[in-house]
Image 1 (cartoon, rainbow, N blue to C red):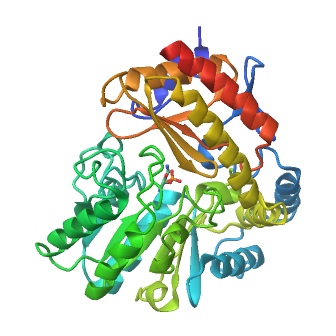
Image 2 (image 1 turned 180 degrees about the vertical axis):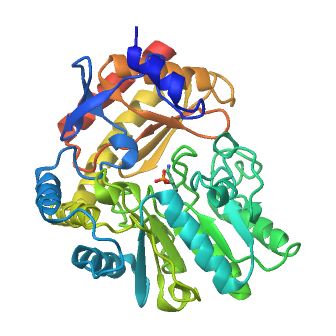
Length: 427
Ligand code: PMP
């Protein structure tokens, strides 16, 4: 039936994750909508897995990309590159990191790899602290610091990794504690780990876990961790690949929810900034960034064409206050979904910030994850014309909602209605 799917399976790896029993091919998009090869239109509540930060086929980005393509696409990083310098200046200033330097890569994986390269070189240690249930990429080193076991195939990681509690608030041994006691328990866990290891280079953490199911620790957890880390000289790498650029509404960066901690030592970004063009990168203060004692480049990191897209996209985001839009529209959507959830026994929790909303499912009357229901809701939503994502721990049981940040109130209501029907059909 699905010829492209047959060809896909014949030539691509089995582990290349695909959604839907009958996977769809997206052929074009506009605003918050995409169309598949059968001509069906979908409201996109997963933002091309958060890569479409502003809107699909945003005219400002299309224009910048086509104008740049007509001049030059890539001149290599061995020559001065004006759009790269311009975007680096903007990101350095937005990052909050003093005396910041920016290195561009082509993906979040490579951004985190670079952050690990810097942190381990700076600290002369290959021990790294990471969070349970985290996701940081698919390369040799980033798989080794990915706590979410369903995304970290067994590999002989070059790093020694120790996993810390705290990324997931509502499951695990500390779930029954109130926020303050939860933080104390996680800090004790961290101190305990530090007592039994060589001094680690860094703690890497997503301020809100993305692949892990859009789970947030209580505000202040990373500030409390930071006090301990600083005593030992351990760096904090904030992986803002999903949480950056105002997605969480209240804040431009996820780390700002832990304000007292100040900016991280290193910050990694990717996904949304290019609106689909491959931009990733790492920001760090000059001392850390410049600690490498040999040349290092990324051939495709910072190509003129991706930088042109990033600049146009960032300008649009700031000029149209899409962070504020994420706060307002996301707030309404969370409220609406909480009202829906109140009548459904299988919805354990609706959580989130801005336009990063998780809906945790459980077998009714129990606390057990319900991956079957999550898969069924995903299918039913697609049939109703809505694309959403899923995530969570080994038993993928959370729905993930992360539309482009320009989502309108009417679209939020339309999507919520489809999701309500899909959830009612599942329970
Ligand atoms: N960090 C986080 C938090 C992510 O969510 C992802 C991608 N899901 C990555 C890193 C890796 O990014 P990429 O897929 O661009 O390599």
